[in-house]
Image 1 (cartoon, one colour):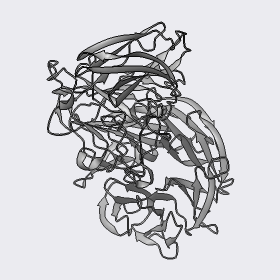
Image 2 (cartoon, rainbow, N blue to C red; image 1 turned 180 degrees about the vertical axis):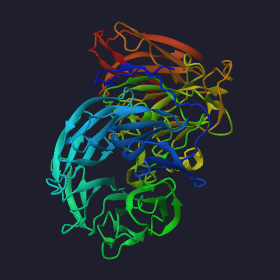
Image 3 (cartoon, rainbow, N blue to C red; image 1 turned 30 degrees about the horizontal axis):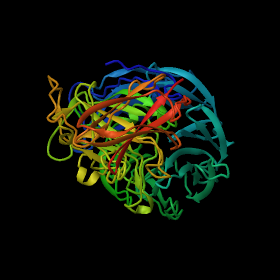
Image 4 (tube, helix red, strand yellow; image 1 turned 60 degrees about the vertical axis):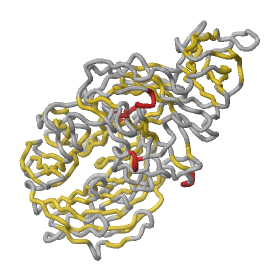
Length: 640
């Protein structure tokens, strides 16, 4: 399929419709979760299957002076200082896809992903950041930062750059704060000498390891609160004295911070502290001893393991993240200095594979620079996510906006009607104060289709919100395919009479205070098929039951409209039907019908007039159907 790319895909306008085609199906065989190790002296990569710990060395030759390695999707990225550039490798085929060239003499050091197609690369000797388009492999622009930038971390829509100040004085030592949506430096923070790397703690604060000068100024960890200043901007709020000369930092899911120091020639050193309390358990006076030349740290939240590179020992050690005790020592290539985990790649997986259509409503914006990646694949894997701690990362969520709509397609499999729930929709709903009777609801109407043209909606009730998505929090991020523990909202195709579906459509319910005063617009995280079959069906099958089980209010057409629009509704049994129009503040505009209808499907029209036959202004409106004590709402857009 073809993907249509747009540099600024989200406009703050009424229902701007965008078409995206993005496939995640690959070729060849499945690839398990794999730890890749960058060997600096060997100028090569080693890889280890995490399930079996089977190691292959020298699987790729990289640059003469490689620095860092990262993964994204199916690709591996190696940052090389010499020659300056990024080597791009396909993690499934193992082919080198090419090189992203960077300025000569700039000494590229580190990188971070700043969107679906963008990366930020620190240019140590150029005192700047290169904004790189990963698709075209071009530098779009550079951003001036502090002196000798090294480590970089992107959190939500903000990049934090550790400016080391440069050898030998390491002055000025700062952290640059960049808005990755505008590519502008918004603030510069002074920090202790020689900041090197950064990590995010479970409480949302950043920790920056400051190495010192390897002599009389020793190491520290600086704590940055992203919203700590009076104007809700980042602020340094604490400094933790560590001692020694630590160069890297990793923080576990339990909030234990580990810092790595090269060591004394016999052993490398790890320092440890509680990131929430600031209490140090292992500093330079009583370090945890590991292999010689401890360089980089990597915490694997999924496997709950901590890894450290031992540069001088040509080994990677696996540690207990609670105690720092060495569990395993693995021989790799010459001079291991950095690591990254490539997540498993499957030729057929249960996740939605493509975004076919996205119609953004007013207020949309969260996740726009990470779309469509943030709605394809698993929900936010952070183990800290729970019913009271929802995901809020634009890397994981897309806001549909007020009345917005999205259509997802399964391309390498399709949903089938099996036992129980057939697919689950994950949204960042949560329980206020942990009380299940106080859910923060961001509801969406769910519809499915076999061929992408004819749609069947799941019945829902706006009194208790049953039948909608966005009601149930994600409760277990490690078992998203088990609806008994995963949370999210499950749907059974039998309820709408379908034997299979390839498309899922989600439409934000809109907000006329029906969801509660503090509830907002639907934020999509992921859609997964619990019951599915690989491949694609050969024919569109007929619905098992075309008669709706309750009443249905269908989407109006055309939408947006100018002079008139048609509203359709279906009822199961004869009864009195009332249909009303409201504006976006919940003010009643007009009653279109209030009469008895026979069972079946019916149509009425609205010509954009109020109850006094006067034309109403352009804007977002809602139409409501009332049947007995039940109601349903849908948004529509009038453009004069």
